[in-house]
Amino acid sequence: MKMAYGTLLLAWLATTASADENPIGFHSSTLADAHDGRVVEMVVWYPSAVTAATQLFADSSVFVGASAIADAPPAAGEHPLVVLSHGYRGNWNNQVWLASALARKGYIVAAVNHPGTTTHDRSPQAAAQLWQRPVDLRRAIDSVTAHPETFGKVATGRIAAVGHSLGGWTALEIAGARFDPDRFAQDCKAHPQLSSCTVYAQTKVAGSSASKGALGADWRDERVTAVVTLDLGLSRGLTPESLTALPVPALVIAAGVPSRELPAELESANLAGRLPAASSRYVEISDASHFTFMSQCKPGAQALLEAEVPGDGIICQDGDNGRARAVIQQQIASLVADFLAQPPGLEHDGS
Image (cartoon, rainbow, N blue to C red; front, side, top):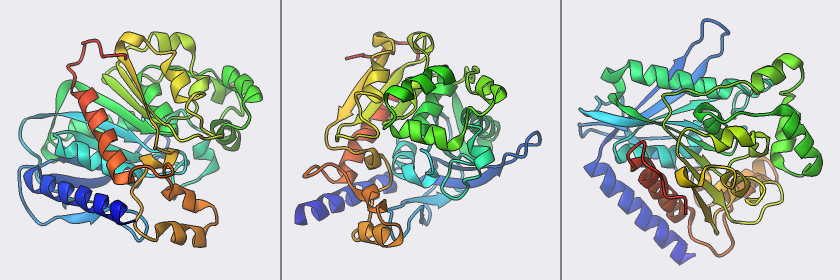
């Protein structure tokens, strides 16, 4: 226990030092849609040139937040953009650790709440429109690029999509992957235990020919030049043809802790094996669980979650006798930043 708290303290000190050297701003807004009324909540973390009083965002009695300067003026120059997609029933808070870490490295990071599949919005009608998730990311790109005075100027040809769990599928969709509902339904007969199959059935996303057509459509945004998935789900429905021809480099990071519902060998590793070797990379982190990619839990958080909803304490669990979540997340943030820092157009190391 002393080692765990010591590691967390070191991580906190490192973050504090980084914050002093690289101030970041934070801005929240809503993106309205005049066509279908789908209102998307968006938050943006971005480099700032000022040093001012910070405040904690996404901090609670359970989860560790991150500090930033509310509505700070953006730093000068051009900055790469990352759009971030959360998992099923998650929210933008879940990857605050990654968003703030990338912002301190010079990235503009926009995270959205996807209506219907987010913590506080579980509308069945919105959830069934799964294809709207990549559209949400496109709208975030539109908004950030249209307001350089608020977030900073986005560098040309430097826009990446990053997603956790169902968000990983979302990121692949906007990067050019295509989904085949019939292929996925058939695969779920062979692997009914997968959580992606359970979620798919719950959302009733393929309830009509029209919805199946929308789900299988091309949702690529050609402005996206790289994609990162974090222990994704729903990947088995992506077509081999679209993955083989994926037009952007991909980094696939998997949780190595054994899981019946989201095993790496059937999801992330399977995906990586179908991507172009020259432009993709696969990393499996042995002591990471599916929930390691979510916010760090505070001491006593697991008991609080269990008291509220029995079974939810699993959110705070990582690998047995492994590293502290803060340390694993530092590794993940470095992997993502190093991957995205490679010049666009060059072949990525597929080893």
